[in-house]
Length: 215
Image (cartoon, rainbow, N blue to C red):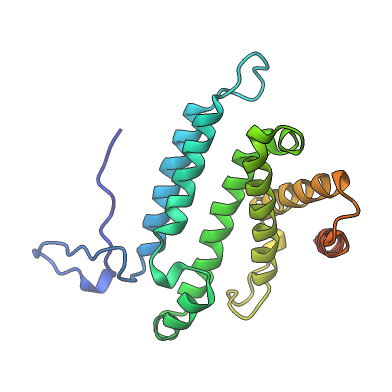
């Protein structure tokens, strides 16, 4: 089934009997985040349809297919409008937008959380192989980087940008992604316990473990 995406427009901009306006995704509305989530959902469906089921041990996805799907996920990250980006300069440029639309700051966190969780999951099967097989080295670096991002974004959910009264630890989907990220980093650390940043990584993983105790 194929349908048109909703229009990127605030409800109050729609008038009876008038054509529905549709702003570009670079214009923030109450629908902008939802439209980006639809794009991610479409890509997640493509990933599920493309990669053989994990239970079928006789099938393995062509690694070039994995890299192609990784590129599509990163393209979504790269093409986010400035008010949904996480770098310091983009956040600075978006201050006025966030003052006008405070929910943008929270949507920014949630959107990146979902994207990095999917990147980490996409490369999970190749993460350990990347330690000794150069062919899969990118998967190791990509999964570790996104796992770090997931944990940092989870920390940001408890910060001032979070919606009032929101308890991220109460949502199973947040716990699932955070657990996967922590396991990824813990496993990676076990292969190189004497790395220069090993202690910092241990502390980050232990902090997540302590958060689980508050649930």
